[in-house]
Length: 269
Image (cartoon, rainbow, N blue to C red; front, side):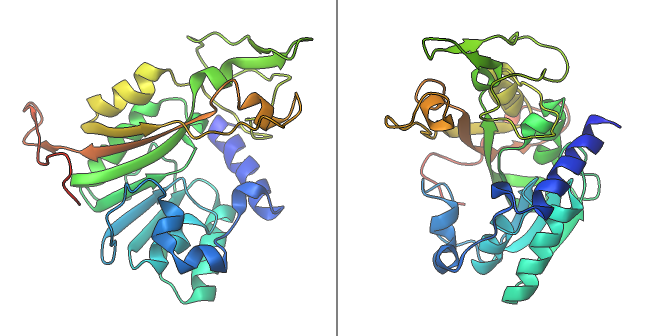
């Protein structure tokens, strides 16, 4: 079994057993879908008629919200059970959503420059080479298109345990090759999955080298001063688990040509 097979099986299980990671959009969230999707103002004020790719975003949440807002939605996910939730929710609400079972690092079924927005939840940790993911996203994103993504921070994935003084211990090599080992600390690890640590030069550097410019970066706060030691929100006070990024696709005039800037700060899609 390859790591992709193992991750597919793990996410199928989560979808079929009602995991928190397979939560569909609620009626309240659907009343203001763009506000639900984007509390930071990264999306344009209207997405009606835009082509949106929900990458590794199966589960009936993201796709339903974008479709409710009027976008033409394509969902790509490795897990057929997660995609089944997207189809179920779309049918239940009279929405149109296209689903495609594929790995995020192989989007050959999608045409070049076919999406205005690519939105990817936490998922790049489940592939070995994030550079392949970024290059595929760059290929299918239109010039000036937006790529919104969230990733697990490398330091968070280096934590292996908590000591007697409730300090979190880094025990995984930052330059690790291959999949992450099992650890006692599983606060931000999904059961049954194979995960990979991507360094900052990969998370941000590879993004830029793939043809994107980074417009914004945020670290969502996951801490709680009242949380007891060992709780994931106690851990979140000391190590930020995630990073969110907004990037924009730049025009390439040829395979050996420099990237051309097509926008200025403040422009809307």
